[in-house]
Length: 69
Image (cartoon, rainbow, N blue to C red):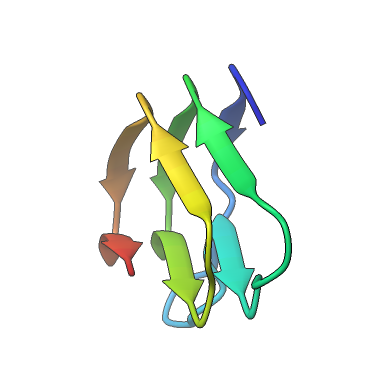
């Protein structure tokens, strides 16, 4: 994804993040030049994954965590 706004997209008191990569081991994933903001939970959660690239993003105003990697 490039140049995307993700607004109010996580759930309070869960591990359901606005952006989540779990077990992404094939290929390449990239999020760049995007704004991820105003969620009630976690902005991004990356586990057991490879080749996930986050470039020039703004992550702000989340109730729990910004990024869990």
